[in-house]
Amino acid sequence: MSQHHPANGRRVTPGQLVDNFNRKISYLRLSITDRCNLRCRYCCPAEGIEQVPHEDILTFEEIRRLVAILAAYGVKKVRITGGEPFARKGVLSLLEAMKKIDGVEQLYLTTNGVLAADHLHALKAAGVAGINLSLDTLDRQRYAQITRRDRLDDVLRTFHGALALDIGVKINSVVLEDTSDEELIEMVELGRKRPVDVRFIEQMPFSGAEIIDHLGRESLLWRLQNLFADMVELRTDTPTTARLFTRPDFKGRIGVIEGNSRHFCASCNKVRITSTGMLKTCLYDNGVLDLRALLRSGRDDEEIGRQIVDAVVRSAPDGHSAEKASRRLSEPSMAAIGG
Image (cartoon, rainbow, N blue to C red; front, top):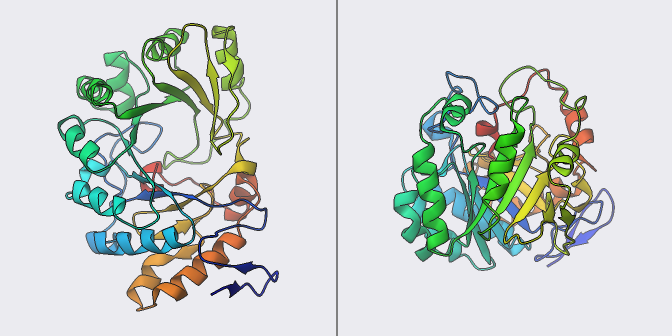
């Protein structure tokens, strides 16, 4: 049955989730916890963030219900994030349940890799097609400095173990003010002989601190192009946040995610749900719909679906507009938002 949106006359049917700018939503990034076993300096303060009470976190049953509702409106790809997903007990059983939901075709996981190595066989059995692995440097001392934990060996064990099992790997590497050229070169080399996407990310202001303007410095892409003059950009027909490049005799790809300059908004196909059940149609908004409240107030799936459709229709055109509307004086931690 079609549903009428009073603001613009649009009629939306199950299997279709489209905003006012004709962006079709097919991708859900779902945070299951705000807990993390690292303290990355660009993500949260050294002392960590104030943890959400357990009863305020979505239960696994609530998560499964929301994914099923969104899948009925065309969401086909689900990525489980945190915090760190393995900081929550039972994550493997949740992943198994996600893959069984009608309409969910692709299941992925974002992890820092500290605890994942011993669970790779289970991830593959659960139907996880790939992992995004957070790794900002291959220098052990620098890794400990950035994450405030000495766990690089564990992360590399996850990296090599996933490749051995043919689990797809994308590396997410945040480029900081003091990231050296040598570190960038070492990271890129991970993709020379391996089918790995090494994706460099502009530092974004989600560290739990005051807002900082990062746009004044030279662009990340400019820096990489100067280091790797033989990079050739690849075209893709699917929505992606990363601009992808290859090099001669290169098995992997180099990605550039311009998260702060936000050049990918026009093709954005995702929504986020935080661990507390807040729907975000943009990384930079304050949240547009309290799904936890709807779930716990006894609303049925049809009503929740209708409100999700309405919230998506009201999406901001881009991240700059969403950030301006949020009127924040400080930024939340990415651990609280969901990576």
